[in-house]
Image (cartoon, rainbow, N blue to C red; front, side):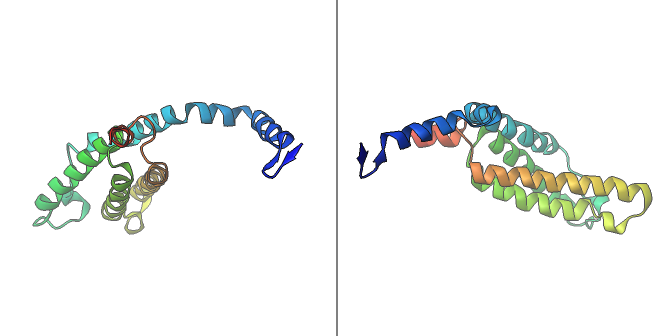
Length: 157
């Protein structure tokens, strides 16, 4: 019998359509929260580690301002990386890290000004940072996920 909201047959078809999805969709749905946690750890640890040391003077930053910018950059890397790992203010931190990576990339990986092997090395580093920006875009869209301080604090409210 058909009701105003559809038929019993319609709900069975929607359920069976989910069962007919490829196995990879089931795996992704079942492990998505764990994978988001792993992704946050993998991208965040890069920045936590590099937050311990930053060398700006060698990258063309005037020696007069490099001592001021280096601690700021190191702080953003360390605190931002840690916040990503913990899933703390994930969307805001992802945007901050995108801006940071764009600026750092334009300062440190100016491949277009180089030649030969140096150019190839910096081109790869530039592309790596573009990929990291892609990872932060995913973090911005998905948020911290189930295993994050963001989620824990929302549930505590």
